[in-house]
Structures are given as C-alpha cells and as structure tokens.
Image (cartoon, rainbow over all chains, first blue to last red; front, side, top):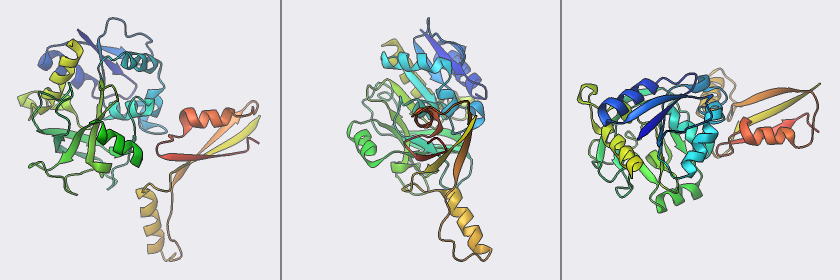
Length: 228
Length: 77
C-alpha cells in the first residue's frame, strides 16, 4: 500500500502529509511531481495544501490542469481513495472531481486557528470510526465553500457533506462558521464516496506533539479505504 | 495578430466582499452615488488568428469557473 503525495510548485504541506502518513499512519508514501504522468505503483493519493502556482487565476486552477491531474482523475474514477486538504480541496474542486468552489473567506482575512468539526456522515468509510467532534487546524484565505442550491440539496440528501464547522459543543453558530461557508461545509465527498476534500489539515493534527490527534482519525479512515 | 479580451466576473448572486469594501470606501470619500462595486478580471489574449468558438472554449476550460463566475468575450467576433 503506497500513497502518492502530489507536489506542485508552491505546495507547502507536502512534507507534513508525507511524514504523517509514514510516521503516524504507518503507510508507505512518496512524492509525485506534478509533471509526472503515471501513478503506477500507488494505491491512494494525497493532494496536499499550499499555494500551488501562487494561486494564479484562482486557487487550484493551474494545478488542476497539471499533467499528473489527468492521471489523478482517472485514478479517482476507478474508485481509488483520493484526499485533498486545503489547497488540495481547492484543486479537486477545480478538476470537477468534487462539486462546488472555494472563495475568499467572508471576512477577507487569512485564518490560522484550530476549528471544531462535526462529522456529518458517520457511515462513510472515511469517517465511520471517527469521533463525532474533531479539533483540527485550518490555515487558509480562500475556504468559503460555495455551491448552487441544487448541489447543496443533493450533497445533503446523499450524505456527502463530510464535515461542518461547529463550536466545541457541536453547535452550528455564526461564529463557528469561521470562513462563512454555505451550510457551514468544511468537507465534501464525491458521489462514489472515494474522494474527500476538506479545508482543515488532518496532517497537522496527527500526533500528540502537534496538539491534537483528531486528524489522525481521518487519515486512518483513508488507510482503511485504501486497504479495503 | 488579434487582441481578445475575456472579462471574468463573479456571479451576481455571490457576495463580492472585496467589491463591497471598495464601494464602502468610495462612499466614505464622498461618492455617495455609489450603490455597489463588483471586482472582476480582464484577461487579454494575443492570438495569431481568431477561430470561431476557440476563446469560448478557453473560457470554459480554464479562464472562468462556471460554479462562481460568468465571462464575456470582447474582440473575437
């Protein structure tokens, strides 16, 4: 079981992802450069955070058209597990693998802090052994999730809203929806359930010395899916 | 050579928080007729030749994200 951590010019959470997958989750993981065209030898993909291509045009827009992404799309469509965190989520939305888009935070500020997430669908393979409330850091300027009403209704109806921003008690409030996302959405699944995108950084909460191990639970879900 | 411009704007239904702030600032400077401001992008393309539908295709494939943006093309007729 080997995980590909995709690297673009401007990725900056690639090492965090690789180290947490290797050292905390116990998976084999290696970097794959954006100009590569094959994922041969890999069973799962992690699209890490950062500022790929300097966020030119739109966050994730250039990266989503990089050579390796055609292969990631093919790989995802075969049903293999793909996770995108932060810029990785933006990239997956730009490819069309996930619905919606991520826009500038409602209050126009970069936000770097821990947030509480509520696991909305505990039956997905990603989240079935995850605590109901997680504390995981975010660090983004463009994380406000946007989709049209029809898409939001479909996501809700199909159990594809993976995480919502809540307060420590699990309640949705204006203050807990830190970036102003529609329906307080922090993470979504594709229709087949094998692709997860989320703005929070599970790889930054994968061991006690990082302040939380709640992100590890999500990465363990990723592992379970990859081994399934 | 031809220059074609693609104007990309946020869909009217979406909050343009930067545009809102600019409108507030203009009002603060005494331009009290300003009701709103919307900020977009202009992408100027230098083309060797203008072929039917090509710029539209560029807008759809890369320049605009149809989830959040509209586009308008100028100079490709």
